[in-house]
Every structure is written in C-alpha cells, then in structure tokens.
Amino acid sequence: MKGSFGRYIVLIVLGLTACGGPSNVEKLTDGIIVRLAESDDARSVRLRVISDNIIQVVATPLDTFSTTTSLMVLPNVAQATQWRMEEGSDLVKVITPRMQATVSTATGEVHIIDAQ
Image (tube, rainbow, N blue to C red):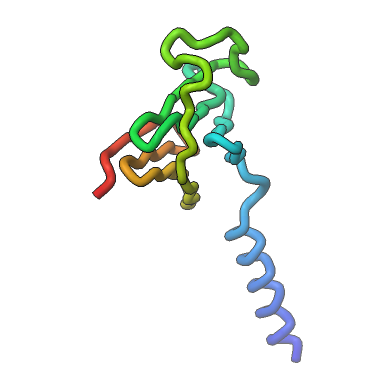
C-alpha cells in the first residue's frame, strides 16, 4: 500500500511538470502574441494573419505594442482567413491554407514557409 502511494505522488508530480505553468502564448482573433522572458532583443512577438499568404510579424522590446498605424499594412485589408494555431513544447505555429509561421517560445525566432 505504501509503495503504491509513492507511485501516485510521482505520477502527480510528473503530470504537473508536463503541464507546465501558464502559457506564454495568447491567441487573438487575428493571430497570436508570444511573450518571451526578459531579453535585450524582444520581449513580445505578434503574428497577425492578414490573408492566406500574408502574416504580419511585429517584435518589441517592451511589454506592449505600439499603437501607431503601420505603414506596411493598409487599414482594413485583412481578409476573412481560416487559420489555426498549434502549440508544441517550445514553439507555436500559425497555419493558413497557403503558409505556416513557427515561433520559438524561448527565443522569439520566426520561420515562415509555404504550405506543403
């Protein structure tokens, strides 16, 4: 009996460790925000789905993003696009029908590829 109780404790600890703490990824209606540990380069990375083949990537060393209007994306050009988010242990993906963007949740490094 005592031995099985110890096994249950080990399983509970392993389960809590696998679940991790609160997620550092926030899903938005049009994309995601990845919050990074303090860094000199970037503190947050935002991916915004504009269309099937356009994902806007913005990084900031601050806790918040600029509210200044972007010169790179025209207002109201975002199209209704089906996209999904997939989370792994150290990365998160934003996937549209035509492309995929992968963000490292540790470093903020972004890789974008065409859909296969």
